Image (cartoon, rainbow, N blue to C red; front, top):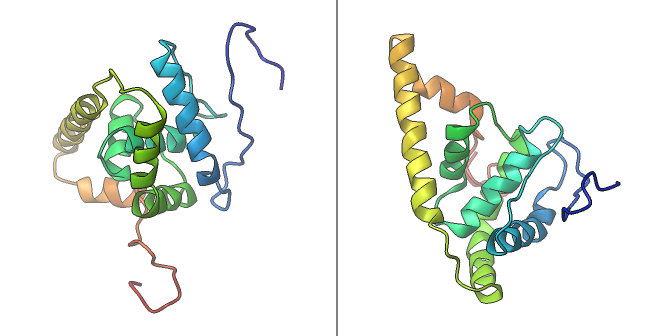
Amino acid sequence: MTAALKDMTYLCIHAADASSQNLSQHFKESIRFIHECRLNGGACLVHCLAGVSRSTTMVVAYLMTVTTYSWEECLSAVKAVRSFVGPNYGFQHQLQEYQMNQVTEYRAWLRASFRPSPFKDQEQVGALLNQYIEQQQQENQRRGGDHGWMNQASSVYPLPYNAYNGSGGNR
């Protein structure tokens, strides 16, 4: 890939928008890239073809790492400013796995690898989460009732953690 703008630094990750695509293998390099960019005073554009699934997954993984929010909360915060985003179920499952198995380790790695962050990420994501909740309440009122359960079920990974583990756990 040729860089479109010569004064920009790029991280290009080749990944299909398919549930079977292992996007989590790129979380650490993406988190590092975004964090370095921000700490160095730059802006960071995270994008994919449609800006719906892959890029959102990377941003949610980053937000999970720099805050204590869950993947669902971080996704809701992103939806507050970009309402049509929605990682495919495979990517949502990878975010769930990241939350259960790696995010604590990645948070420690980030703190050990970089200077303290001057950003108020926890507060800003919290404010976006509150904004999203208000937006959902207004939308429910506009529709004439509380249909939030319908919206939530159709947009968030519907199965409990380890639903497919094959060992007789939660199914």
